[in-house]
Length: 105
Image (cartoon, rainbow, N blue to C red; front, side, top):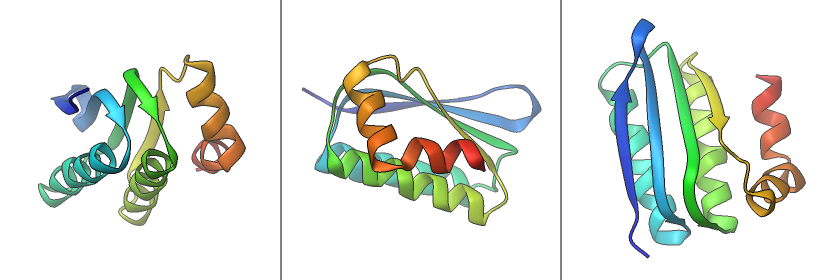
């Protein structure tokens, strides 16, 4: 399955990144690049990562999400992951501690 990230700037300088496809090794690298691009343009007030259309999430994808959280936190940017309704994806995020770490920020 192909992978893509659609970026949309919302009100109050909040950027929403909608992720489509497999968030695996290749997808994780592309997601990291997309987030680095957003941050290099001047950190937004907030970053929303929308996983609604993620078909597969593996350990490399979780690492990419955790890295995004660290990049945002280091820049003082609020970071939220939404649409983790896929129970397996949500379980992986919770089990790895990423969802807990993000929700405490």
